[in-house]
Image 1 (cartoon, rainbow, N blue to C red):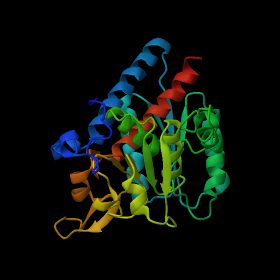
Image 2 (cartoon, rainbow, N blue to C red):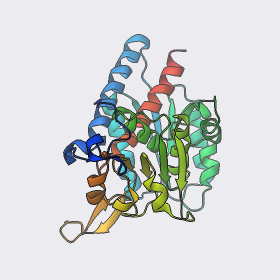
Image 3 (cartoon, rainbow, N blue to C red):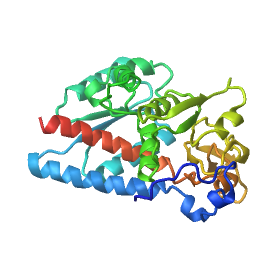
Length: 319
């Protein structure tokens, strides 16, 4: 869904109400619906996959390798397989016992590297403790690194004038959410809360590629609230429930909340509920746009994985 381009400067506290200082947008219009945007993208991917099959008789293929039987990992893998099926992407699945050797897993990755019908490889993390995750991930071919974490892909992401083959799915989803919501990022002040290799750091690099002025707030940052208050865009990815309070946010800011935290809730059957890194109920009163948790960034991660797999398939199949 496209929205009108966001008008910066409105709703700033130092602008008189007659100049648009009063934030009067209804709260329902402030919500960035990640579920709906992801569904649109998945439909677009489905159309492109069908076109690829019609023209070349071949569809992109995604291999998922899972080691052990962690329930959360099993759930993620099932979701990925279902998403592939719906998009027409061929799904390869290799389930390995917890006590598999590191060499066994490396060999599975090598086999998928050599398989011309497989265009993306994803190793579900975490791996068992006796395995070196870095070594296993480094074995994935650069051309099939649809998770976007190969050192060469991250290196190209950090270099001006270079483009990676793939960008990590969750931070890429954050940028796509902003762009599809009509946010013009060029020249804006952006703050990323959190500096993880999975979300925070790549998100900061992507924002710089979009010509934002970027600050990364982390556990050693002095006055994080003051830094966030100057931000036009906040991407919160610290993994700390309700860390970003209302007084951290200037009026009219746009907030992407990546956090997924379990907090006790006696009203829920499970005894807990999911909440973000942003104090949503308060933040929505000041923000111009904000993602909910759940239903914001989460659905975009799988949509971006499918998008990366399609890109890889197009590069391979069309050539």
